[in-house]
Image 1 (cartoon, rainbow, N blue to C red):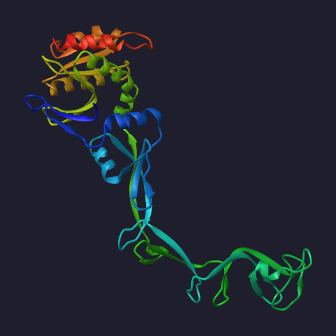
Image 2: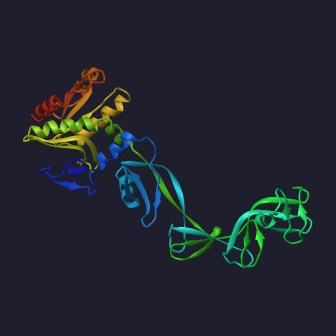
Image 3: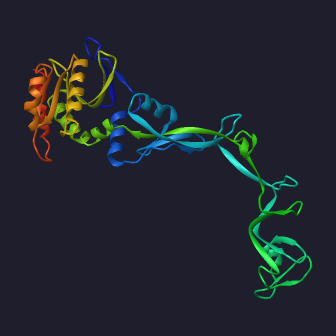
Length: 327
């Protein structure tokens, strides 16, 4: 089990509140392990704004809850066009004739005959002879581009009134039928998110702690990977592994390296004090144990040295340390 929240203020420490979102922390950690990029909003027809994580579409309301829980941080925003009347984000564009306002248009490359000033789609000027153009108005041949005729670019011709123009009237129509000029379109801004560093750190060890969890389960102990525990101060802590034993619940935490060591150990000490009903089993680099031993309460924070190098402790051995820590 994972992605649960436990209440440290409850005397029996058995109050578990399901986040109702299928292991949120493990879910985010799994994504963080595979992806470094931010999580932008996306528009889904029939749904609205969603955020895609691990091939799952999460609603804006749910992702905003993750932000409020300090699991995600905002790195920017993305704007979407919206109807100012009904806030619909589903807008379509309608191109119309600027004269008669009708939407029956033909798009083509435009040609203009300088002599008679006739302009129209290039198809109207095509001659039966190769490489020659004939004006459909005055029937003169046009051979020299830039002198007898020009091609100003792509344009439109109204099939109803015959007007030729380069810039049509642009009208936006929302899903509910409201018509808007371009300068009337509203903008709605949605955050771009990034998974917080703490979750990213957990991503590197989630699989390992899952192995430890399995070893503990094999010993008949209840263990949960990536848990949220509310401390006595009301602060919610994210814990890599929580274990229930017959004597005392144990939280398993770690410091993997010495970078920012002072801040990290202060955080762990404060966390241990806030979670007073738990024994903390803290894995730290082997060389730091002697520095930490004088400043932590050995009854509340039990230090376990991590072997040097990339090899991690055997999950079964960690399970034994947890059982010892519980007393």
